[in-house]
Image (cartoon, rainbow, N blue to C red; front, side, top):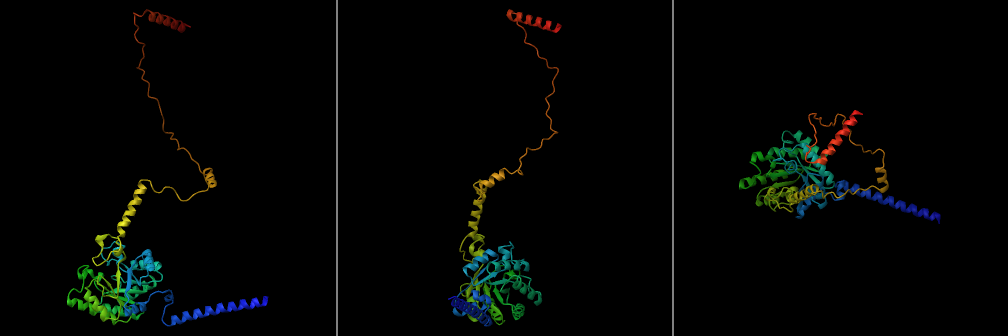
Length: 376
């Protein structure tokens, strides 16, 4: 009987070991086929976006700049999260994106990666981080991926020089997302945050930029910002890369909005005209903060501490000899003195009324008595 039990336990153990080996083999096989290890946890990849475009399924993208915004985006299940240099205007208080540094981008990309460990994260190369030389572009792109934890980088512009820089990055194995139309990093040269491609010639130039980006291997998608519908639709139909629109109409393969804009953090007046505002968080935040401030000032919060001490510990605490209460020290320099006596002040009895015989007799008797006492 005992022997049969041992044999049965050995068989069960061998089955478990065999199943583990089979699972490991399957995982290695999938990795060798070009699927990343994280893909087993449903993390999107560049192949995911191409398949969606081919099937006609919309691609969803949202910006995030910190741990909590990334956490919510990850929980909802967006296809992509963009750590945009728009962090300068939404989180850092700058009037443009041009003041954002590499340190800013790495810092915020790290936070987003912690909040969304299994999302596809794209990080912007900020203004001045890639224009000077290819070496500078290499260093900063690698920093966003290796230090920040991004899966890809985004570069604005579609000119000839920009295309060369992008080609160098993709040849080194760095996935790049393009950005054409309104390029916020170039507001100084285009005259501000203005829509682009509003003439036939300018629209054709944007379409041409999209085609040039498509010819660069390693570019997996293009953001198209603030252009007419007809330009967006033309780009989407004439290139194989997925297009992500923002303020560019419904003709793109996907859409992206700024986290703070769609939630209404800044209030109704600060939302771009193309943005649909799904909430007005700013007003609700202001109301909540005002309520807290009022509660503190009116002493209605807090009512009591939620943390309690047992009765036994209370006795020990109150009776602890180390706790002493002493009166404040007495200042010896302080003296109290009566006001000086004025010797000139004299007190006299009221004048005697001669008409009062009884009073006169008493007075004479008193004076005689006093004189005898002085003689003794």
